[in-house]
Image (spheres, rainbow, N blue to C red):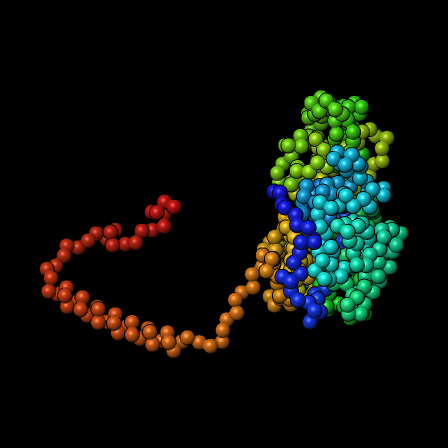
Length: 473
């Protein structure tokens, strides 16, 4: 599906809700990187449970392919699949730009990588609102000429508590300076999941620590008087799968590395064959290992939405869950990883939310991560740009008494208002007249029939209405 993206500069401010006379809705989106859907059941997580009791929980969240950090975080704030927003992996090559991107280098600050889409903080600011970003991937990059109103340059050494305190300051600023939309990112439990593996007993303490951090955030919101005003969404980008040194696919066993360039890392690897070597490389890899799926770019399944972008390489390698793709065993090996097929349960993230816009103590079976964007736009009462999500898929998460009016551009329709006056007297009189006329008609028919000869009895089948199965619809 190809969408025509709209520049944020084309947004018509006059068509938006007028916020000048009342306070804008508030929303804080929090991501705990690599927090798998089932971690909350593994150890006591009282703060996650508190949000679930006071708000909503989604049991199954289908994130986007590939299930890596940068693609999924950009999907959350654009509502687009990776092929649409252009951040297709943590490591990329763009043949049109002849440039490489890596989350480990300063290439992340090159605006050209990000401008195939418009993140929500830009849209909020074009609507006259203010945003604040604490370490969210891409939020410290100039995108379409804008940074968030307030933001922190990415620095992994900055503590979670410091990031929270800065967010609280931004939301608590005087009217006209306070942010309306905040985004907060924390690297754990992803880092520990990679190093320890999700099945390690040592992960229990890491998960409990995340719950404590969430409790710190909730307490700070309460202390500042924001807890009942700010809509809080807590989610993640992906889950984590357990790896084994016994499950390694070594590409050097199958193809000479001089024939291709390795782009991105396991478990989904982009392969760029050297000029004129496509058929040879594909032929060597296609049936190389039963735990390796090899796609030509044009044959990548449509349901992945991972085909229509020049940054997706001509050949894609996908390891089966639990397997690692390496060129040889001398490289770095991790005990946990993500990036696999987004339909796998271990790749699914957590999703809980609470606040004035949400229902209470409500559990939803499933949603897609791209549906988060139109949901957030609805809460913020701003018009979403074209996206791959749908508010209809998630509107049941919303309170039955919406706290804000909805812009006409969203897909949620407010029921028409019912007038208080009644038509009962008029309707009653009309029914009375009809009944009298009907009585007179019946009387005339009966008198007429008595004066005619009797008719032969019709068959019972002819006198009955057709059953539904007889219609053969």
